[in-house]
Length: 153
Image 1 (cartoon, rainbow, N blue to C red):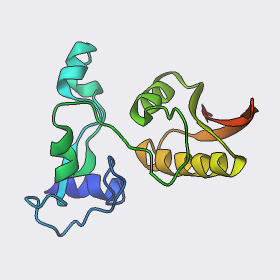
Image 2: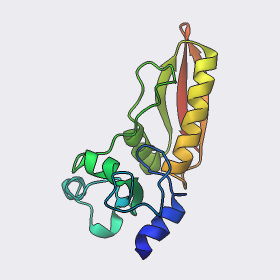
Image 3: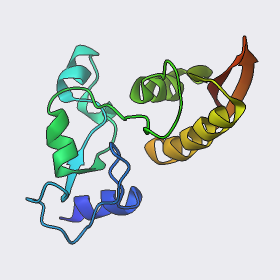
Image 4: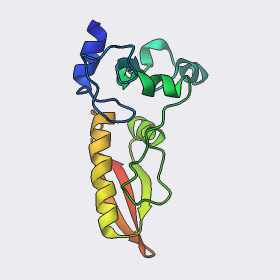
């Protein structure tokens, strides 16, 4: 239970997939109970020819979120209340920004207010998803829409 507790503390007792709180006292057999997960599956790491030591550390996940994805690559959903068009996959963008830095176009929004809301959510979500990655957003007006981008610092 020591590793689970350490990872839970590091992740602020929030599921890295759904971003909802995880109760450390809940039974690990409960669907909302705590479990350990990794951002990259062992099969995917093998395909990329990564060794075990280079795998990302364990992350805290609800048991249902962890088993729901199974051996598939994880998906971090965009919240329904954000109005975005062509949203980028969060995990793939995070991996590229961590690996190469640079800029990632994340979504287009119909209004500046929608772009501001998406920008704030992205910074907040990435602060927990990739705590060591320093990011800022940029909002550009493009043909009547607003493009929200993340930039690694």
